[in-house]
Image (tube, rainbow, N blue to C red; front, side, top):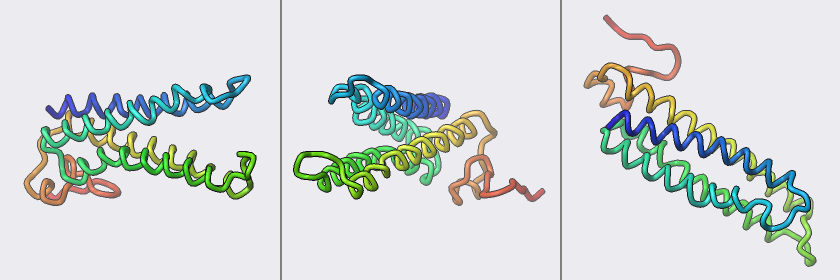
Length: 159
């Protein structure tokens, strides 16, 4: 089951990478209209959350550490934040529906949050791979929520 989890985590990371590509496609589309970002929206609002939830279920079934299960679910929450950023940016447009400096400042957070999604997906994939293809963790590691004895910083194991 741990290998299944790693595969879904890999698909989640791939979807996040595709999301960045689709954002660029939409940004450079000419003439730009509402359909320019249709694929970006579909991938971000459907594919990434579904893969995140499926990967989370696989992580739980694989008995991954609780922190890793939570981290695997995090992209769903970050996608919700993405939608809130766009909605909040729209609130500060002018009467004609054009962006203002304030709305642009808020909408710029969409890209930063997108990078956070990518970082979380990359971290999840790396940890899922370690979990799937490493020796079983000790009971102490499991209690601490570490994967294969990993700690923050250089790995040090007592003999």
